[in-house]
Amino acid sequence: MFKYINLSKFKLNSVRFSHVKSTLKTSGFKGLQEKYGWKLFAGVIAYYLIRDITFYLIIPYLIIDRT
Picture 1 (cartoon, rainbow, N blue to C red):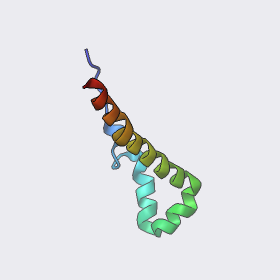
Picture 2: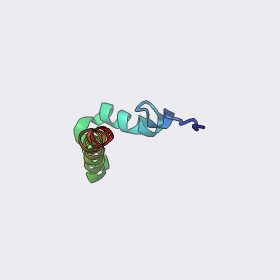
Picture 3: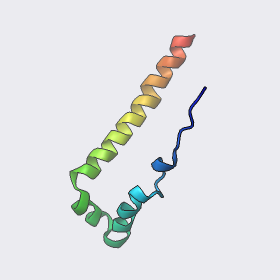
């Protein structure tokens, strides 16, 4: 009925984020900003925008809609 969802690709310890973590450890936030620039900023904004819309708009709407 439900398919198995592999969440291992979303963990921060995965291979995708290892180069980001190593850059942060070696050069700090300034080095991370110089290497990734606006993409880092856009990713953080997109993450929080999606999270907040889900928590504060979609979930309450679904709860109110059922009653």
